[in-house]
Amino acid sequence: MNIASLLSRPFAHRGLHDLRKGVPENSMAAFRLAVDSGYAIELDVRLLGDGNVVVFHDATLDRMTSRTGYVLALNSGQLPSLSLLGTQETPPLLSDLLNMVRGRVPLYVEIKNGNRPGHLEQQVLSLLNQYFTQYGGSFAVASFNPLVLAWFQRKAPHLLRVQITGSSGLRGLWLPQRCAAINWPLIAFGQPHALSVALNVLGSPIVGAWRCQGKPVLTWTVRTQNDLERAKRFADAYVFEGLRP
Image (cartoon, rainbow, N blue to C red; front, side, top):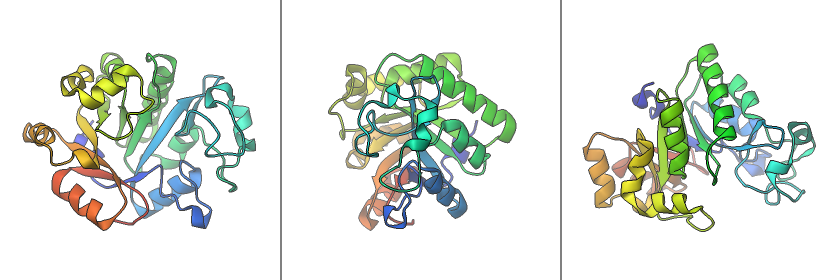
């Protein structure tokens, strides 16, 4: 799979969401808007209690819905009853998103797993293999957790892998995730094809050294014109929200 194709356009962060227009993050409406606008898509996936894979960022329902509790405690039959931020949108299954995109734009699939890899990764791998067979297209799996990337490197070395790292958002991360965010040698554990780093890490010598080896760097999250200029200067691709680059 071609890394240049993956990084050929900007990634809409959790889709092209705009709550003022009733389009919440990680919703089918946000993903359709991204596809229609020609942007690549960054999304987050988690495991449901029935073994299905849902597109959802948080571990709990509290921020995005009127419900409380863990996403892992849900089953897919309950998703249609969950309103995302008071809109008509509900959390989609990864399979629904893939069947809508149909290979038309690149996908950056962040695996939200702070534990040892296993069932979630196997389910994602199965869905992505089916997707590629049916539609083709370009996509990558990404994670803060180096064990997740190492799992994909062993089980599916043909898939593009992105190690997410940086100095932002370390609170609440599991120990190996923290290590990958602050201990650069551990980044190589999952043999990533690219790094995805926080904006405030761009321009550092070690990021520059990575790029000098011919390895690409993504950055997140671009929200202002100044952010955009910095991303274009120091990174090969970027994840954005709140603007139209």
